[in-house]
Each structure stands twice: as C-alpha cells, then as structure tokens.
Amino acid sequence: MSAKQTQAQEFFARNASYYLRSAVHAGGYSLARLVETLRPEPNALALDIATGGGHTAQALRQAGMQVIASDLTGPLLAAARGLAPPGSHFVRHSAEQLPYPAGCFARVSCRNAAHHFVDVQGFLRAAARVLQPGGLLGVVDILSPIVPREARYCNLFETLRDRSHNWAHSMPDWIFMLEQAGLQVLHTEQFDLPLMVGVWAAGAGCNTETLLRLRAMLLQAPGEIRTWYKVSAKDGWSPWADVPFALQQGLWVAQKPPI
Image 1: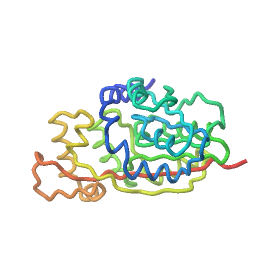
Image 2: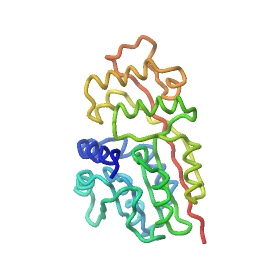
Image 3: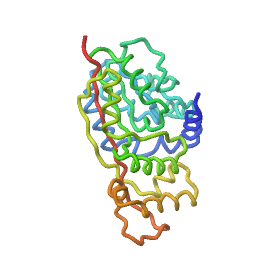
C-alpha cells in the first residue's frame, strides 16, 4: 500500500462522521446529474468505487439498480453500512484493484474521490475491465486548470487542507485518460461547487493556523487563480473573515465499446 493510500485511510477514518452527513456528498447537483447521465437500468448490477458515505450507491439503488459499494477505508465503509437499508452490499478494496470478473457490471461510478488516487489511469483500466460491453462509467471529481503552474497552485491548496490529496487533473487530461483506458467519452461537463473556506476546512479537521493559510492562499493568489476559484472577497479582506469561493468539478460518462 502506498503512503498516499495510508494517508487517505487515516484521513477518512478520522473524518468518517463528516462524510456521512456532508451536504456536498449526500446530495446536490453532481449527484443528481451523475445518476441522470448514467441512465440506470432497473435490476442491473452497478459498482460504486470509493463510496465514502455511500450516497452515490444509495442514489443508484433508489433508481432501481443492484449496487455493490466499495471503499478502501474500513471505518468509513462500516459507518456507511450502518446507515444503509437492508440488503445493501459493501466490499473493501482499492480503486485500482477490483476483485470482480471481467464484464460483470452494467454501470460503474466514482464521485468526489479520484483526486485521492495514486494511479488514476489504473483505476480507469480496472473500471473498464469490469464493465460489460456497452456499459457506462460515470465519474465526478474536482478539476485543476490546464496551465501547469496554475494546476500546481491549486493542488498545493488542496493538499494544505488534506495531505491525502494526490492530484486533481484537468478536463483534457481526464478525456485523454478515459480514451487510453479504451473507453468512448459520451458526455462531459464542468460546473461550480460553491463553498466557504471555513466550512470546507472544518470538514477536514484543519486547525486555525491551516485555515488562515488556506484563506491567505485564496486572497493572495494570482488573478488567474482567483478567477478559477471565483473568489468573491474584495482586496484587503481580512484573513479572519470567511472567504467564499467555488471548486471546479467535472463530470464524465464513458462507454465500454459494445462487441
């Protein structure tokens, strides 16, 4: 297991209660839109990877699918299982090593998790392997800008909040990786996730010093970064005041080619 995977397990085990009740993870545009674009098939089998609090898996169940929810973090998986309806299925494993036969799922989903993965390309290859021909993969994750130095700034900002963050990729990077995994990209979109820095930092258990540094990174960021994050605080805003901003998220739906 890599150091990042160990950090991720420790982070999510420590913050399991937050991810179970987080409004960002439990609902919102990205969840509804992911389920809609995946076009659930009643009684077909789906796999939700890095399920966290199990919210995406539950939404797919409510849409009529049979769902296996998986995650690498045991305590988080146990907490999600405790809130799930009877008959729900949970399995512990990584996103890159899927212990299932090839071609057994009609749908695979992964929401708000891939920026923690050490090997995103390995995750996509594994997802493609377990999909049925014609099956769909749906992913939601945070984005970084295309320009490398801007991407580095945004990823440093993310890592300051959560050391288990690995890398948020750009929209073109995601499309390239999906195609490299042998999948045909059917749908992409980008949208805002409005947040307040203080609430966002509190969810990760950040201390006061880290919170102030996060606010300063937004308030003192170059103009293109402030534009990317849609920072609405005016120049001279006190670092003790909370700062509104928006993470950029992407959604991708890709299909395994039919036979």
